[in-house]
Image (cartoon, rainbow, N blue to C red; front, side, top):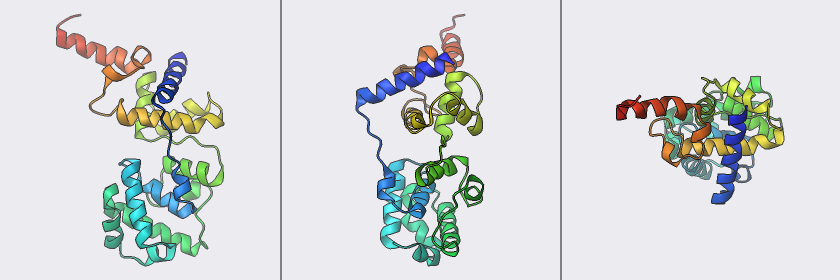
Length: 222
């Protein structure tokens, strides 16, 4: 698919031009459990907010057992910067209890990971990739939205994942994931899309159908 290939190449150039460097949070959260908690905290918020929440959580409760024994409202108060604090706190406490029973280990298969609370396909893919070296391409709402708009298809997480994994080497997946996610967070947003600042408009199905027709309707032109 030419438009996808061109779009990803331009995002790569944009990233190089801005000198963007991806923060490796795995180096901060070295244990598999801590990293899983951090990824859960990133849901529906920025990595920066999740990082702040995770640091506060592990500073107060530095061990899995302490988190297991903590009260949900105490965990929720610490992870407040990440939002959805009660829901995330309950999930983290439940996962901590599971990991304690499982001798300190988190699951290492997709099926087992996705049985944990708040662990869906995207989170499982990140954990498989980062903790167990299993090739996976994580798709969140930003990536699904960007790929759907570029291609003109209404993609699911699974079809968006297959779109990339069928065309690119596994060694490229992580960088593609980061560029698409960053573009979705900053430019190709869900509501106030910044098409005027986007380098992909000529290869974007969304721009060349919906946005162009919308502009014509506003201008009164045909």
